[in-house]
Image (cartoon, rainbow, N blue to C red; front, top):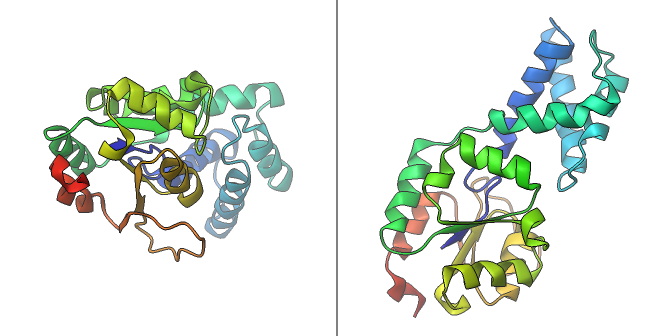
Amino acid sequence: MIFDLDDTLLDRNQAVDDMFLFTLENCYGNVEEDVKKEMLRKFKEYDKRSYGISDKTTVFEALFDEFPPINRLPQHEIQSFWNEHFPQCFSINEHTIKIVKAIKEHMKVAIITNGTTQRQKAKIRNTRLHECFEIIMISEEAGYTKPDKRIFDLTLDKLQVQSEEALFVGDDLEKDIRGSQGANLLGIWFNPDGIQNETDIKPYDEISSLDGLLTYLTPEVLS
């Protein structure tokens, strides 16, 4: 069973909230509550626009331009600020760890994630996920990003399993589900928010909680 990282195993949305609060503390000081809510909304909007882009300078520059801070980070320091502090904003639900360990007792587990090696490894290390997964494939290291089938093929080779013997679990219909299906894996859509599927992508299964994966604890379910 192969997992996506951000917004599947880890709650990236909460991490963005925490990164905003850290930025507020370091750059703004005391801010009125109604202004703070609007700043967070805009910060998340800017972050969403830049999702999948390594350089986050534009996120902060847009925030600073709209809401001038007391201490403005120099432009050349913004990326280092993000790289150093954002991975530390991630935490993991202990129940998620238990689910992964339960699955690992029955089958091999791996991670495929898009992103920079430095940041993704820091997230994985800070949340102890490296203790649970023997194979972790990061797009920058692999040279391919989801939904490119080659990153899935590389992972299957490392796991020494055939595509028809594997499941992929992820939250993104295009990158995770269409991508994994393009490599002949069974794609399970992790959809905790009950988002309506308005695409032509048809997941093998849809789950609202990782607990739903416990029905796949024996390899025979793939036959």
